[in-house]
Amino acid sequence: MTGGNDRYDAVVLGAGAAGLMCAARAAQRGARVLLADHNETPGRKILISGGGRCNFTNIHTSPDRFLSGNRHFAKSALSRYTARDFLALVEAYGIAWHEKTLGQLFCDGSARQIVGLLLEECRKGGVELTLGQPTSGVTRDEGGFTLELGGRSIRAAQLVVATGGPSIPKLGASSFAYEAARQFGLKVVEPRPALVPLTLPGEELLFRELSGVSSDVVASHGKTRFHEAALFTHRGLSGPAILQISSYWYPGDEIGIDFLPGQAPELLVERKRAQPSLHFQSALRGLLPDRLAGALCSRLGLSGDLGNLPDKALRGAAARLKDWRFRPSGSEGFAKAEVTVGGVGTAGLSSKTMEAKNVPGLYFIGEGVDVTGWLGGYNFQWAWASGVAAAEAVAERAAAA
Image 1 (spheres, helix red, strand yellow):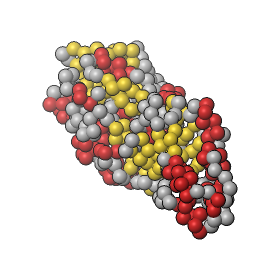
Image 2 (cartoon, one colour; image 1 turned 90 degrees about the vertical axis):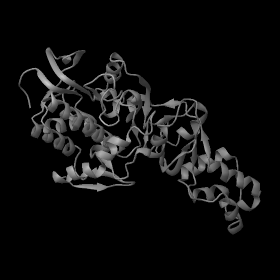
Image 3 (cartoon, one colour; image 1 turned 180 degrees about the horizontal axis):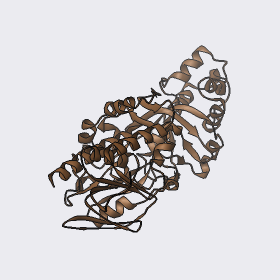
């Protein structure tokens, strides 16, 4: 996948999920494509995802599971390349997979199988792959785009930016997509960390001392709710429920935690009637992990047998346990964020092709765009779908040239 002259139908910058898919599809449809990345290894984020097994899609993918300044923007691409479409590709390569929970699909083996699949798709299309070469500048004229790429001057009629967002900088993440967007007159929605652990302030030290304790909860922010596990850490809160709600959280906001999901508000009063001699903390320990029950009991300030506690106090305790309010002091930032909320504004892009409306031949795909999915394979599905949408447009334009 190397060699040739320095003029292409399209250059795809970024050999992550979206870039690999786009390059492969465009090339297989007849476009001459160069895929370039400043990293030495393609698909680095794919390789670490899902604990090394790659949560490559979610069978419940739908547009309402994505955050964006325009909640309708993702509909077109997601409807034209679905989770079933990518699963069919996985199965065509004989890659064994399983559904873990909530529609999340993982490789039985290794995430390397997904990267291998994408590289083979690129090979089939004759994609030229250049790794470990930084892009030092991009300019545009009537003939297309010129890029300085590792000492080479590259010309291309079309440019696809698939360089992602700033999450997980140790993998080589950068703000290149935002800089390119601004250079060509597109607006950028302020990026912030998403799917990220939240930190707690000093007054919540009691909870930080629960590091390692996990519990089934419902985490909420406004009307948004996620029923999954929460994990207490030495810095604050993590686990799937917290990562999900973090995408909706802004500094200064509160989040709510229902420590008794599915339990009735009258739970403790009913337990009092049935077991009046049961100690309050023992009642909580029957519902929650021991260390968590002890910490919550201490915060509630109740002790003694249930029969000796007023119904009003028990109802108040249950109400607080079902909507315990936390005001995080912050998040663990882009270093620990799985993805980024915000990015290249969708108002400047075609939802069908990902092409910049005012810059013909310029496309933005994947995480760099202001479309962010829930935890559980949704962001990979957006990468595949947006990559395919751009690829089809790239190939069509190349064929017409």
